Image: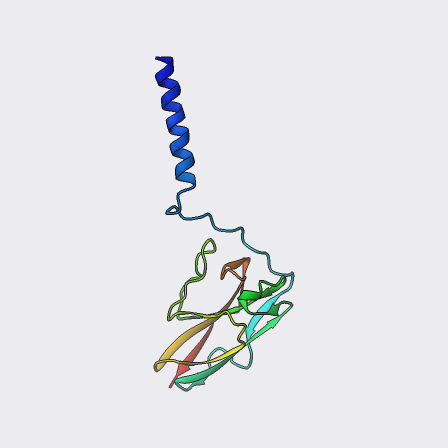
Length: 149
C-alpha cells in the first residue's frame, strides 16, 4: 500500500510540474511599474466641453516622465494610449487592449488626428510601460468630453 501511495504522490508532483511548464497556460502578469513621482499626462490645448470637427487633431502632453517608443523599454518613460468613450480604465493586471476605443501610440507619438462621429465623446490618456501595462497607480489624464459637430 505504501508503494502505491508514493507512486500516486510522485505522479501528482510530475503532473503538477508538467502543468506549470505548460505553454498553453497563461504566464503570470509582470509586477506593475511605478511611475516617477509627480508624473502627469494631459491633453495639450484641448479642453473639456470644446466643440470640434469630426477630424480632430489631439496633442498629448506629459510632465515628469519621458515619452519613448515602447521598444526602447527606457526607465522613467512611457508611451500614450488614447481611450475613446471608455467608461472605466482597463484592468491593471493585463496589457491595455488595442482596439477602436483603446488606441496605442507605441512608437512614442505625441499627437494624432482621429475621426469621431457627430455627438459627445469622452477622451482620456493612459500612459503605459513598454509592455503596454498601466502604471500602479495608473498614469492617466483627466477624462474630457468633446462635442463633435
